[in-house]
Image (cartoon, rainbow, N blue to C red):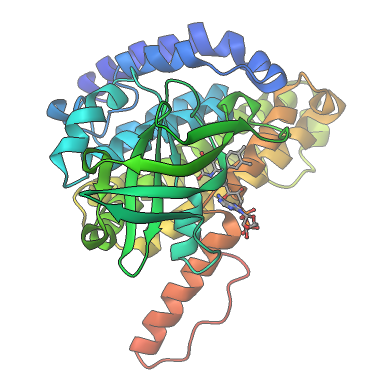
Length: 383
Ligand SMILES: Cc1cc2nc3c(=O)[nH]c(=O)nc-3n(C[C@H](O)[C@H](O)[C@H](O)COP(=O)(O)OP(=O)(O)OC[C@H]3O[C@@H](n4cnc5c(N)ncnc54)[C@H](O)[C@@H]3O)c2cc1C
């Protein structure tokens, strides 16, 4: 790590160790939402690592942002997801062609003064041919009026911003920001989750919510190009959650081996194998991040890296709980929590099944274009 990287990361690591680490049980078991930690992390540049200074960022690049998320994930996968939500909203705003929306929100989001959620799962799944779009917009003046609901959006609620997408009849799609105070906009609690309860995940309802032009990140004519610009970065960004959880799981296996290594040696997915696979993914991500930032990466290697971290996170968390044995089955043991966090990495959009579908679709299209046989359906996404 260079001196400049160290100078950026050291205060962030200190904050994680002093403020987040003591709260992880309360976050997991009581659904504590770590708002103060998020604000402080934002002040240290923890959401704007990938953005230049004029966008309120720290100018360290996307790989540094992924490392911040990973460092948080080493202690708490749930909060690592919040870091991804917030840093993705900053990424969306920074990449918008519309100066008014950047002017309104970018600096506050990048520096964590305004906490923000990304309700993009439905749109991303819709664009991949998986489900219908849930929000509908019609034009009104130079803005839009939006109705519909999204069932699960994290890092939202009173005083927050939500960034979502809607279909505009006969025109395509828009992406826009909605402050919690907008008339006709409300958020409601969801049924209890088995993990990630500290992410303030709510159902968002839009009833004829007016979206002024100043809140629009992409109009229909801009949308397609805009999504291609932001997607590699936000999908790569999620890998940070998985990296942090895998590192923690390797640590649990190592600690357990100190007393019961003589029997743990018979388990699958040993510490060394997991560490080697993790190093492979980290190398891939280090290569892809600057390309994503420059708008010069293909989607396929990004999707494959994201699928690989989902698979590895599931393996590592299973291995950690098996290494820890009955102790790892106690609710207070981190191995238990890591198992639930790991499943989330593989089910949050793009979920593992979604990734394998998109990988299959892209490879089939490439094979057809090359007049070769279409690729067979994927059962295991290549790492
Ligand atoms: C703890 C938690 C936090 C989450 N946080 C966010 C977040 O911050 N932002 C976000 O956009 N998503 C969030 N999600 C949603 C998540 O990304 C997936 O969309 C969701 O887990 C469903 O994926 P699936 O592959 O199981 O759905 P599928 O099995 O493909 O779909 C099941 C059906 O459920 C409905 N459905 C599923 N997901 C959605 C959706 N997102 N919107 C509308 N309808 C849907 C649809 O009718 C769909 O056909 C969160 C989920 C969880 C469990």
